[in-house]
Length: 282
Image 1 (cartoon, rainbow, N blue to C red):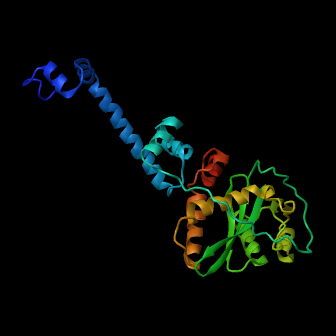
Image 2 (cartoon, rainbow, N blue to C red):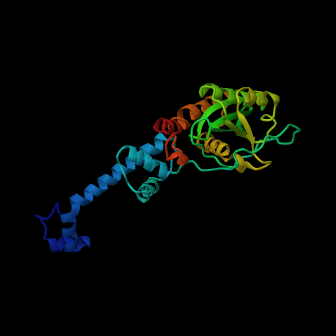
Image 3 (cartoon, helix red, strand yellow):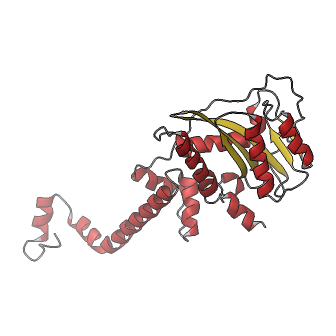
């Protein structure tokens, strides 16, 4: 109608196009504003998509909102969810996984010093360790981690084709070395035979650490470690082609050292990454 208003009468065009004259004049009056809203929506969709891609399709609305805030863009959570839905984005979803602990052994058991209190007031106050297995095209690969509960940083980890005491000892030794050989750390784990082994207890004793263990068959006593493995498998492994052992090792290194510790936002520590949290609170 705007284009042909010099050729045809307004009444005739309105009748042919099945619109009202008032509707046309409303559009004419507000078209600049509508165009501005449309451009803002397009720009928001672009920023949401970029955050989603940068997170390797792992972030939902809350973490994307934190990314946008770093860019001085502050849409509410409903607006971000609308953008996610509009673009058909879907973060990698959760799946259940099996427990690998073997608690059927005759080794001594340490008391539960954490009692599900996973908050720490400072670094190297409470660590949590656990083992999980990862399937590869060449068979199982076992991953042991040590997590500092203060920042949820993975301070030590080890990968092996065998689930032995050496696996957990290597992870603990890495944590001690990276953290400057701290003393008086509570080191929590499940009751697996690897954590009850003489070699593991020797490291605990020689470094003046305090060993703590979950109750039997109670995964909630070591929920933070379980949560880490859950994130690793959901965000980096499930839905991907089956890797060989070398490829799986490379994936674990990238996820822990590049993604999880440095950039992945963690809801428990104010949606900062572990490294960001420790720098902010140093």
